[in-house]
Amino acid sequence: MSQMPRFGVVRFPGSNCDQDAYHVIKDLLQCDVNYLWHAEPDLKRSDIVVIPGGFSYGDYLRCGAVARFAPVMDEVRRHAERGGIVLGICNGFQILCEAHMLPGALVRNSNCKFICRTVQVRVESSDTPFTSHYAKDFVASIPIAHGEGCYVADADVLAELESRQRVIFRYTSTSKVDSDGNPNGSLNNIAGICNEGRNVLGMMPHPERACSTLLGSADGLILFKSLSMALHAAK
Amino acid sequence: MQTVKVLVTLKPSLLDAQGKVVQDGLHALGYNKVEGVRIGKVIELSLADDAANVEEQVTEMCQRFLANTVIENYDIEVLP
Picture 1: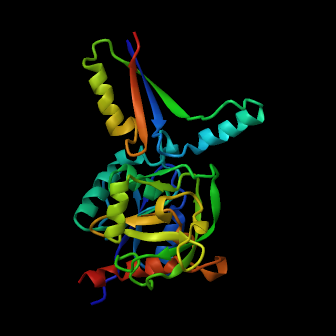
Picture 2: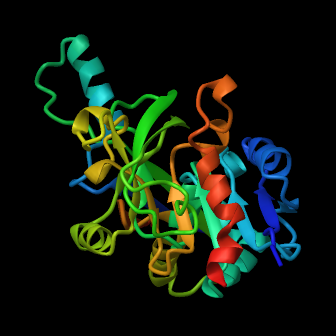
Picture 3: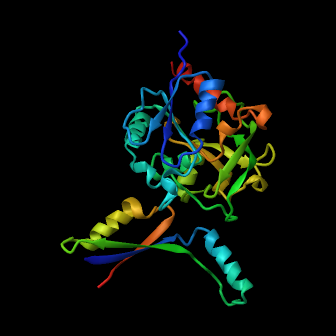
């Protein structure tokens, strides 16, 4: 029997991409979706947890540094440890790094500016529940909107990410990854990485903002479609 | 009350984009001898008089929360 996953979208004070993600999941994927309030340690039986973009807790101290203490985050961590799927977008990626669920950190863009524009990112691996419907090396047009999206990690971590194909998205301007396409100074043009189990993904680009050709690009919808089939793939 | 000052700075290996912009500003004002600017933050903690092992405690706070040791260094100064 076909089984569609149930999604949960976390809401922190300061989240601002929660409704976009909710809309895509409910109206375009036609999957069940609930908001998950930061103060409640309850994932409402979600199969897939989305940590959306925004400025959780005003990004005080460092982006994502305070969100990791939210009661809901203990449940998100347990969910991930059980192999459950977690997608962190933009501020969600920063939160996952601060929560040590992904390695490395995101620092201020190298040009010191908040950048809000569509960029090209190459899909480096189809071997995740997030990217199973993309062809490897597909170049997707997806917007970014961040001031602190420059991915950094020490050399050992970078080597580990590369050797295990854990870099999932890379900024590019053509089909061959080139530094011209790197908007924020991220090491190795990294736009998104996954954990060792490949069930936790953090990415700076906003796939939920690229789900309709009418609005510029539907390349992000492929990620959500991949997720909607994730439970099948797991069986 | 005991006061502790924590200075958090970006690791030297990382580009301090903010510092670079401020350096450009200083150059624009004619301070051409400025060869580098690094910007950090100061966190001032007030601890109870009977707080013990202050330096050890604050080090732990830095490790766990006040600094992200992937990207930042910290210095702790217990004020007299």
